[in-house]
Image (cartoon, rainbow over all chains, first blue to last red; front, side, top):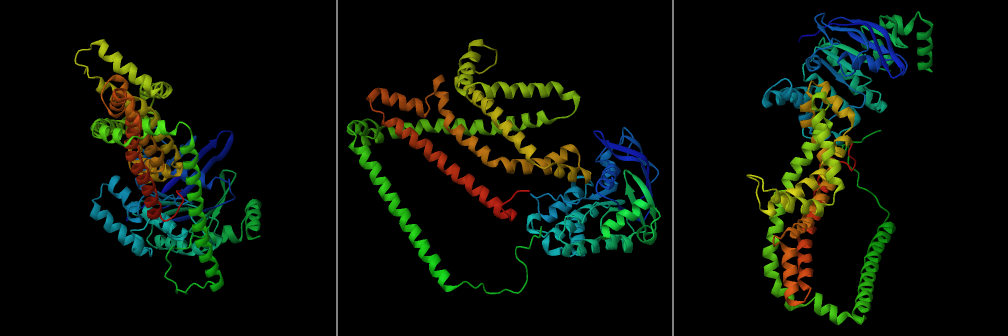
Length: 246
Length: 291
């Protein structure tokens, strides 16, 4: 499996007059799992969307593997997205397609894999994430946890070098969060490079290589999970965590 | 939101319903059915009674509902109706193509397509604003009068073209509404997989858009089936024209009623088909809501 590193260099992004990212820097090494935490509106989601070109940046650079500049004016964003997968909070599965078609569409149309090859890969991945009997179902028939696992499989099936997770458990019933996090653990084992925005502090502590606390559009504090989550240096990190633990 | 799976493999428990409640529900079902039937019979009798008692009824019955006139004109009307059906069958696919193309053109982003976008917008504005009958008259009598080289001088052709242009503008708007009804997150998800803008439209947005607008689209089909009769103003002998001819010969208007029956015979199955199609989609998708 090929993975890539990622370098976000002083990226700015605003929506109208609201400045969401304010010169943010972030380096992610190959095989690393980086967890982004921070209040709503701190820029986690926007950062992830900038990384695979779903939102154009206003200033700064995002380098993939040191060789591909995502933010250059003439970058082929489809090429970027072939290398960087993303899973969304609201799953965003295609409701008019079966689970199998959801997972094979990108493989067939973007990666030009044959139907057999795409089907085969889809079925193997579905089986790995406990969805082997759901291939023929439509997404509406699945539970939230199952839908999110399908969305995950859909992204993984494209053999991305980096995976971005945008609060993928936030829309789920607490009982269903575990099954999705198990799936993420499984991908970490494989050595994929993962950047994940989440509010699951327990998971962050256990699975992250590094935790970054985003505040007002910059990374205010970053480090090992035990350091950032247990002994944060910054006052604002402490406030956030305190509010979080209630 | 906790979506319980529709068919969880959990232990099945026989549902328990209080027997008194079962009896109550059965009684209510019978009573509802009886009330409905009685109400229907009473209303129908009353209406018939009132209509038949009107002083003009015998004359109306003779002029509009004469069995002899009906059976006499029916074969000719049926034959003429075949022309309406052909007009419909030719116009409808063309309308779908025009409508979809215009809807897609209006959504093109690139500045190079600005002229196309303007043409599409003006087209929709004009042809939605002009009555269909007027478009038919203008094209049917206007274009052949130009004596253009190579342009067909058959008024029927121009009647069909007029229907296509007029309905194409409506259907373009229906398609556009359908495209707008697909949530932007669907487009985002497709693009995030690396699908191009065109592939996103083709495989993700349009299939959902078309599904969402199938009912209004079929509604326009039904309307078109009726409006094929407008072509009669140009002269072709379709069913309305034939009915007019029959009526003017016999001074009996029963052929109009017969023509109306023919249209209804065509549109009712279409309506039922629409209902069936929607019901099937709902079942397939597993829930009554389209997300």
